[in-house]
Image (tube, rainbow, N blue to C red):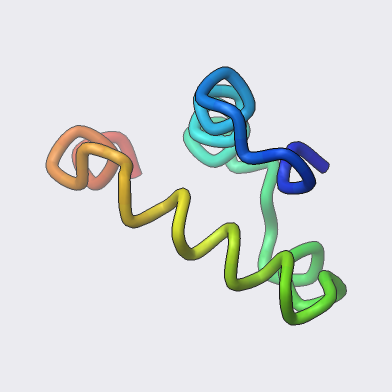
Length: 55
């Protein structure tokens, strides 16, 4: 996944994957703890109001 380097463009790709529903709970649960933590960090940087409107 795009969680290994955490570059800004990787974070943008993760946001797109998230908005498209491609990061499922089963995928997330299969991630090692360190990558789940990184995903949480990236999610905390999303513009929350924009993301929640589209869900």
